[in-house]
Image 1 (cartoon, rainbow over the protein chains, first blue to last red):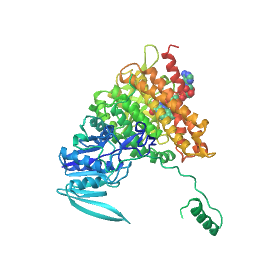
Image 2: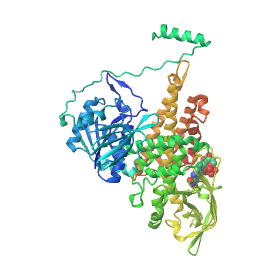
Image 3: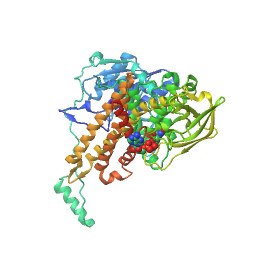
Length: 256
Length: 382
Ligand SMILES: Cc1cc2nc3c(=O)[nH]c(=O)nc-3n(C[C@H](O)[C@H](O)[C@H](O)COP(=O)(O)OP(=O)(O)OC[C@H]3O[C@@H](n4cnc5c(N)ncnc54)[C@H](O)[C@@H]3O)c2cc1C
């Protein structure tokens, strides 16, 4: 079985992002990691390979520096990788999905595809759906339990209130992984050494016949989240508090 | 000149940092509070490869370079001194002497389990009456037929009295040299040998989650082959072990300083007084600037010492400098870090208090700061 895992190179959520110009940020100063949700996908793919044999291929669309992040996924046990290089960290989901599809078609379509349930940087939660749609195959997101056998996959996802939805679908399909699916392993040091020797095939969007400027959505401007100002405590009896609250909402904040 | 780490060294840092943050950080405070050695964490550290990092694959080590090992200790110490102690002592003092001086049989017998983190090994040098003056050891080993008979005691021996302990290397007097001074040899003693008792030491101020032991040898008999290397090599083996060990203690100082600085910087940016973050007060900002600078210097010195060792150049002077400087930098950094935290810095909920306590050992263990200055002064010709 051939499994592709889509892995995004994202800033560590603990990093302090300094905006640079209109749409850039100082990426040389911060640490990048494998998008945490994608790690569940890598772990699940590697486990399936360990059980049934086959091949796990990491597919990444990102800046050339993403190679370092890909090495982490290779150290977890993936076999090789494809990196479609772009100039910007921010590529809209439709173009990303097209690039992933083209790269997979070029390499030979897999039997199963994993993505994370979303990426922690842009959080648009679309790539997996767009990719599945363009390939004409089923997709389930936020999968926390999965079993794969022969020609079908059974995925479970939490739908709130402790209820679960169980979905059976044919292969190939796209699985959006989330917390609970497994415990991603820490690579052993010798595997880190071996990861260095594994192959990363690099190609550009143009090599895949795609036009970087043909994005559905473009980033106009990055702005820091405004700092929260201190909370105001309203004193007095309940009646006085309510009266004061209404006054603030009407006059000061002008939301009523 | 090239200051870049290799890709693997960068990855080791990244993966160990992640492991330490996710697996050690949530438990470090409680283990310290309860003075508890964690077998579970030790095994997990073994699983990713933190033991036997510089040991070749022939003995199931990780076959990595020395800087990778030092980076790994640094990243663990950045989160917790006790776990870093288990790793540093396990590698430099437990595994190191067997790997460098052991016979093929000894290596085959012990290293695979030690490198997998399934067992630990202690290095018993210090005695109640012989600390800095390691040449004053009184423990004796006498050959009786095909067995060594060992008598004496050791104190403060790391990793020597937990359920995972497989044995200890003990330095003992085995005769008199031509110049009238005692002759030392190192002998391997397996846990459970009759007459050998290892007792955990409690009520430590620091490294409370690291296992420290008193060892008693009462007519302990071990086979003649348990000697490490040749009879009379003990003193030289001990000095060589400590030279490497100093680099790992240096890494603990460097990592501990970085960890305390990380906490202080984050706190200073968050804590507001007089209407602004305290990091905006020059008195606080300058402390942090000094910390950042000293950590940078400490890292450069320690990595250079490792680089010299990796390139088989003399590194003993730089190792002593690295150990001394990194441990004293950590002293200054933890002091600033607690000061920046104000009253909260004295409370256990704020981890910086643990760093403050854990620091002090680094100026005492594996050669006190005074002894490091003695070593350096000899190298510069005083
Ligand atoms: C938690 C912990 C773990 C340890 N782990 C191990 C271990 O695994 N294996 C092991 O063998 N040992 C271990 N040790 C022992 C440690 O290495 C010794 O404590 C250390 O070498 C100092 O010896 P001492 O405590 O006897 O102090 P002393 O040697 O008595 O020193 C007391 C003071 O006198 C100073 N002094 C001594 N001689 C001189 C001199 N010539 N010139 C100037 N000043 C001098 C010292 O610097 C120090 O300030 C450990 C200790 C601790 C606390």
